[in-house]
Each structure stands twice: as structure tokens, then as C-alpha cells.
Length: 315
Image (cartoon, rainbow, N blue to C red; front, side, top):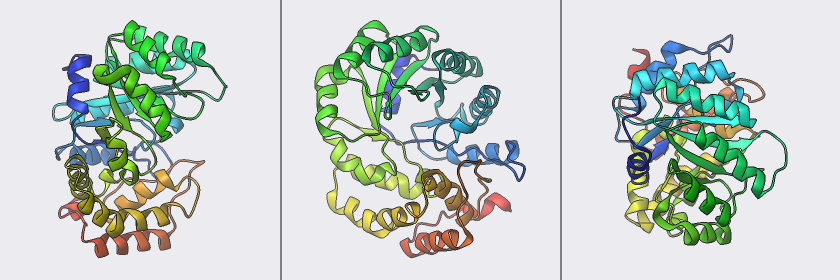
């Protein structure tokens, strides 16, 4: 049973940092429940506004529907009393509806709706797709503007008029003109969050376009740094943001960009670098090399952002 109405959830999420916990997989690439629960316990011990289970960083694309439901349920059980837990939905419309129903049954507070699987689609199709998912659940729904799901300002407005539980717009394009149109058309009816890879890089300029929050992947392994960065963004402290970009974020991107798919893999590599257990990634992703992890660990130390309690994970 959700603790928040969709509007209460939107109000909660829009003014705090958001993150997507990794899903731990063991050596056989099965879900490692103990490691996942321990990670959730750590992640929910900080002042984060919301955690999205089985999302992109959580390798939701590699989970079966049954696995996704299990991952969301564990997240709710482990962290839901401290922080709102949201789920993800994707694939076909029928699969997304099933994901939504499973998430609501598991106690998730909301849902991030990923682009439909593979096929090209236009605005009428996107409207029908999102409407079907919104109608199938009572929890708040956030659309993810990326890939083959690029929502026009008018489509977003139509969804907002039609469904009270349609609450948010997440963007992974960074198209300033498009974002301006969406915000100008819809205003405070929705909340807006940044979803570009390593969102910290774009957080300050996107704040001016109405995006009051974003999803931080690096929160998984350097939560204090991620929260400090978010506070600097919200305070519009350009000097502090620039200093943190130079000290850690931009060098981090250089490691991330060594291999395609490292945007997810580097998060689990970061956990390993700070002495915590995020498990392995599933194919088609590949884990960081030992040299990559060593370089990332050295960067974390040079930046002075190693979590104080990270080593307690394996104690």
C-alpha cells in the first residue's frame, strides 16, 4: 500500500536527490539477495529523496518480469520505511502494464516508464501507451524522454490532463528547445528530472530549465559527495559545482567512456573500489577491468571522497 498520493510523491521527489540502486548479481549472474539488501540498507541511510529499483543502473533491462517484481519487493522491504521506492516498467505495453501492477502490489510508490521496446512510434502511439499504463495503476507515473519515446509538449499536456497519477518528466536528451517547450506548456503540473548519463555534468544548466532534480548513479558508491554536489546545484553555487566537476566528475567520465556500456558497469566498479559489493554485471554489459577499478579507486582517493563507512560492508 503506497504511503504517498501521486502528488505527494511528486512534491517529495522534486526537491531532493534521486538514485537508482544497482542490482547485485553473483558469480552465476543470479540475483544476490543478501548483497542487494545490504546495499539498499546503506543507500537508504542517507538523505536521498527517492530510490528507483530495477531501473537502468539496476540493469532492469536484463531482468525477467518475475525478477523485476522480486527486486522491487526487496527494495520496498529493505528501504521503503525510510525513503520512497519506485520501480520501472518497459517493453511492450502489455509488459509495462504487468510491471506496473507488480510494482504496485510490491508496495512501490511510483513508476518510471521506459521507452517501448525497439519499435518506432509517433505521438498518438506514445499517448496510447502511457495512458494504458497510467490507467492500470494508482501510483505516480514518470515518463522517460529518450530513444524512441520523445514526448512533445502537447502529448505531455494531454497525459497530464487525462491522468492525475501522471506526475513527472525525466529527460535523457538535453535538447534545450524541446525542454523549454515542455516546461512552458506544463509548468508546475509536473516535476522534471534530469536523466542524462552522469547527470551531475548537466545539472546546473538544466536547473534553469525547470529540472529541480536528477538521478545520480554515483550516489551508489560516493553518496556523501553526490549529496554535496546536489546541494551546490540547488544553491546555484557555480564555483563549488565547477570545483567538484574538475576534482572528480570529469576525470570519472574519462574512465566511463573507455568502453561502451561502462555507464552502468562503472557504478558497480565504484562499489568495488570503495570496498563494497555490487556484484557483477550481466551481458551484454561487461565489468570494469582490474586496471579500470584501480584507476577509479585512485581517483576517489585523490578527490578525497571515499565514504567513511564503505569498508564496513565486508566487515
